[in-house]
Each structure stands twice: as structure tokens, then as C-alpha cells.
Length: 456
Image 1 (spheres, rainbow, N blue to C red):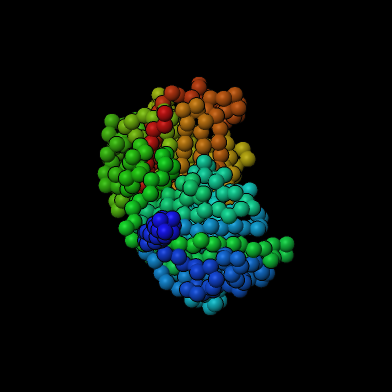
Image 2: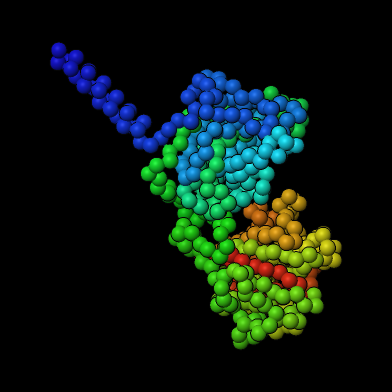
């Protein structure tokens, strides 16, 4: 009798613990048997239930297809497991998403945030894409440490956290992407079967299971350290960014922290601060003939610099670094330059060597390797990023994608300098520290969200 009592007590205790765990705010979005609570949108791919998983299968001649929740959600934490058979294609998990009924010739098109699932050589699983709207927000090249988290041939644990404007993702427990954005506060979830390009991709399956959500008593999950944040709210920093050493070089309201190159103060003309932007005015299209370049009051050595810029048609400008102002040359001050250029219109794109004067290139030295889809044309905002590591390894990024890298002061670097217009300047680009410069090249260009952190 005593033994039966102990067994019963153990059973009750176990059941109590299980009930407590299941009542901890988590709700299943999939019953493991049916597609109740879900509906198909946009395409014609097939969705079934097999062995406790939702299974999507690719088909020819169909646009992207989505199995979406009938309910919409605001703030949440979503967890699920995913497995893809095809390693040449990709998939995604929509969140806070919507339907445009007029899209796809009236059959409807899903748009909104997407957790990228990418088993290909690119390895961008966990990045954030904006389906049928803004394209990539967070290519996972912004967080290389997370690119190996997704494992092909097995189920992978996905976690998406959206609390207010803060969107965070994890892959198998590894922090992946961090986006701060105000575009959508709520929407549905969707499981994507991507359109296919070749017959060999037809009939491939994607599996989703253990889909659960939590919407109450949400608290932000710690996100590791030093991970880049794509912050789409102009001239602001999240608490996470501040804690990781980021600070604004432009406050969105004043010229504080800047002065004219070769000038004691900020230029009296040629630059405008208005509506959260610092802009160089259009003049003659020549270097520094109006307000002239502006530089930071501080000098920097190893750093991570991020900035938004918007070109006008045909514009030329640049962001320079390791500017010493020691040359006292006429025109623009000398320094390593992240080139800003309308490649399609400005003649400088066809000058230099092998395109080394095009957008995001290390001007006159190294050509930026970039795809057209990652270039936003004049009139739109682009994000540039320059990382100078303490060991003098340097990287340029454009809209989240790395477009070039080099070793400052190496033999290869000096050989390039010897072939460039900079060969007349001794030890060009090798100063221990220097100013950050925004160039006046006589064309209208605007900047915002200029932020930096020191690397040690």
C-alpha cells in the first residue's frame, strides 16, 4: 500500500510539473495532426501533415507560397524546428506579415518580415528579409559568427523574439540578427515554400514542427555581446548598442562634434542640418569649393563605423578615414575613402582601374564587389559600414553585405597605393589615427545615423 501511494504521489508530482511547464505562457500553433488555424496564400505549393510535422513541397510554375496563421500577433516569442531537403534553394518564416490582395495579378502576395532559412553556401539562416517590400534588412554577413549555426540534414531550432520595435533571432541557440524597426507592430506568421528555378528543385520538402508561441509576460532575452544592430530609427541607439560601446557622431539636431577641414569651426555655408539630416549642398560639382569637407573633432584608430547616406542623381561624395589634415592640400583632404557615387550617371565610375572608383570601393585602390540588388539607387537610403580592426584588417560593407577587405599597411596595400593617385603622399593611409571626414564634392548628399564604436 505504501509503495502504491509513493507511485501515485510520484505520478501526481510529475503531472503537476508538466502542467506547470505547459501553463508557462506557451501555446501551440500546430496540433501535430491537422492544418487547423492555417491557410495557404499567394502560390500553389502543397502543404500536408506527416509524422507530426507540417510539410511543404516545391512545385514548378508557382510564385512563393505561404501557409499562414489565421490569427495575427503583436509582441511574441516564437519557437519551432525546421528541416530542409534542398540545399540549393531557401525558405523563410514570415512574422508580423500581411497580404496585398492585388499582388500576383490579383491572386495575392504576402509581404513583411521574414526569418531567412538558407542552407546554401551563403549561410544566411537567421537573417531578416523584408518580403516584397524593402528586401534585405539584416543579411547574416553582418554577424559571421552565426553563419555556421544552421545544420543541414537535421532539424534546427528557430527562435524569433519581437517586443516593441526590437526584432531578434536565434538559430540553435546562437544569436543571429538584431533589427530595430517601426514598420509593423503586428501581423500573421507564415511558412514559406519558395518558387523554384530548375526542374531538379521540384518535389523537395520542408518540414516544420514543435511550433509554439508566447505572448504574455515577455521579457527581452540577452543577446550576447558585440553583435551589430540594424537600427532603422534615424539617429537613435538602442540600450543594447549603448551597452556595447556604440555612440552617435551626429545627434540629428546640430553640428556638435564636427568642424570644417582646415577650418577652426563648422563651415558657415555649404552644409545644412535639418529634419534629422546633415547634408552637403549642391554647388559646382567640384571638390571643396563651397562649404568644404567636414571632419570629426575626435580622431580614431580601430573602430566600427556605420552611416546612412542618400545620393542625388549623378552625385559624388565620400566618407574618408585616417584623415590627418597634415597635407594642407587644396581641394578635398587626403584619406582612405569609402566612395559614394551614382555609378550609373557619374563619369568617375568609368575612371580609375577596374571600377575602383565606384560606390563603396576603397577609392582609386580596391573595387567593391557588389550585386545590383544590394544597391539602392539615388533618392533612397543606403547604409555604409567601415570596420578597422586593431590588427589593421579593414572591411567595407554596403547595405549589410561585405564588398571588400584589405590589410592596411601590408605590401599588397602599398603596391596598390604605388599605382594610384595617392603615390605622391608618403605613408598614405598608414597613420596611427585620424579623423572621420564627410566630403563636399559639390553634389547634394545627405547623411544620418552616423554611429561608431571603438575596437580594442
